[in-house]
Image (tube, rainbow, N blue to C red):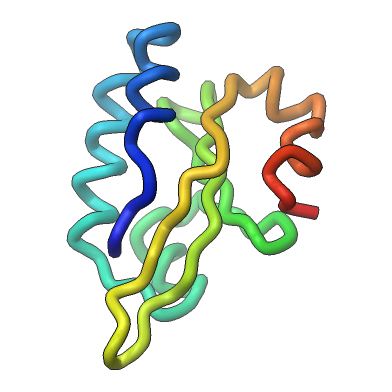
Length: 104
């Protein structure tokens, strides 16, 4: 998968150093994948959830949430993962990200 864009992960890790390694592992894992449907995501990350048209990943044992949009791969298309937000669990629970990220 082609991931756009890494700076939000770095910025979040600067403010939450314990998230750096799990976010780096997520990045390295996803880059090697070719997800064609949500079930493929779940086969890699069983705790991933669909919320509207976004996928939410638990980071560092559910302490943080990574929200992305996925344009799934096809036979001829590698697929794109667009990072929409990285949040603490408390920020995620407030729900404001749904409007900001256009993830109803």
